[in-house]
Length: 278
Length: 83
Image (tube, rainbow over all chains, first blue to last red; front, side, top):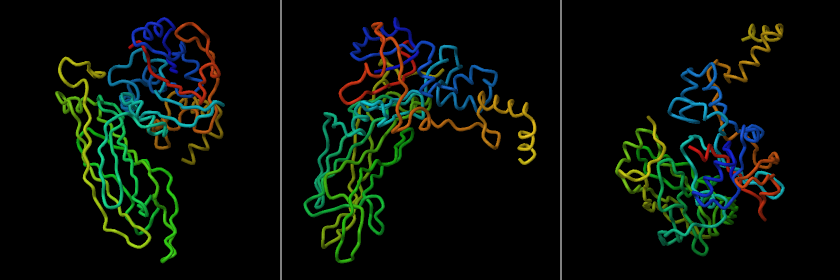
């Protein structure tokens, strides 16, 4: 369900236009937003006596607007999502550092381990593992935070190294940097300890199928919009780097080149645009 | 720094001014703006969220219990459906 400061009438109209099937709550006056501790205080400050302070203006551009602040911003939250269990306890949180960025639903589902999206993946087989990799979304806009998923299945008897393994190459994804595209650190799942008897070593590894996730955001700044203008595809290249061993042999490190392609919306003239700065 | 602390300790009016300033314009020890850290705002993982009582788009008053699905709920705070 959603919560915003909008009136019931506005929410009813929005629901009709977008065929919303879940509750949208009208927190007129923002008392609930305030009680949750996520009122956008940067906006409140910008509308107050210190509104012209340059450092505050810099925060405003990140957390609320790149335009002049207006009264309609008063009462908005720092946008975010809380997942709670039946008892109302938070199990996950998703809050953004930039007001124009949002996770896609598929990204959230993947991070919750709640199933994979129905997108076409790339299958790669090496001597040591099977890889299926895909972007969480087939098409994104500027400011869309999607994720690259790498489902790795080590071949029988094989293991690869997890974070914390000393003296071995930890499995890693290296994305080739490109302007106006940010990537997050890799999200690693929990690993298991492998006991290598000949050396009496205990090392964190993956032997069972596991998934690595790495978020990608094409930025929505004015410069990014200029750079991406007219583009209808985002191509990300990188490598999956790992070292695999079995109970006898450690094989040479591997660097597997990979490419992901996602469609880009809203950058071709005439198509719907993301929020604009003036 | 020591003299500033002394001032705070000895003068209640300075203290209340400092508190007032802190609530309207967060400043760090160097006098610059405190960084907003959205990861620290609001209920954290493991904490219970506050209950609420708000009308939904049909006018029905909802609380946390009434929006719960079989596995819990997803609470999305967004800016506006109007602009």
